[in-house]
Length: 288
Image (cartoon, rainbow, N blue to C red; front, side, top):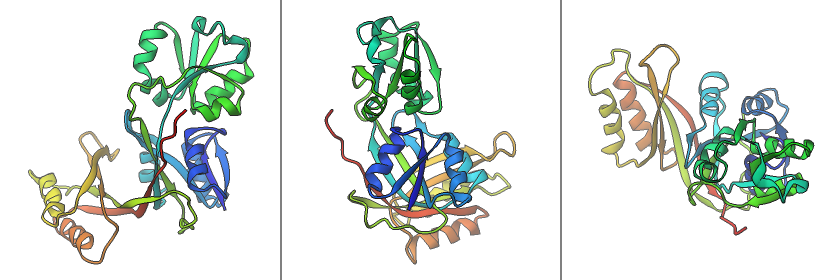
């Protein structure tokens, strides 16, 4: 089995794949759309992509491609702790406080705002496709007075020196990753412990835009005692003020409650798409 992930090697997505599928072959791709494309083109059996970070919120490019471009079903979710470190080329270890540019993914840079403001104020920040791509850039440009924000695996993979560990703003920094595939893949071999089940829906409100429509949607879940762990609006890209809602229900698809809620929503004039009903897993936090 081949699993696509946001590359190059040693991204946080790579870590999630190694934890979730330790015996499978991970194939790095340079962008999230490339990962989804690889599944559509049958280059890989599945892909793992980031969906949401506890500090920076949803990964919009994942949502947009999943909804508008490549509607692949969600087969599983894995949540992993995120630890951001500042790292430099070994030959620049002693002079790291004189760096003039920092490379990383835009989300990683945002997650480390407090540290960068206090210790690297005025240093140029450049966004790249992933944290590992930033680390790889530092390795390939040893004469540049630069640093990368990435994980410890990236430091080991690319031979960099961590000069400031754990620079993210808050300790509870986790990212949700989702497993996408055309068909069901084997999940029982994962060494991770299953935490629970979710069902994800995409709901579009009635076209007449009547007052109280969202309240009616939420009521369909409330009176059935269906616990919602997330509700988020995203633009439909059909005009200003037009949105759909992404809802996560804390249970797997059953024969009565969720189908009943969907039927009630459709009777109200809503459009409902099932994005997936799947188990979710948790990577345990490790000490450095």
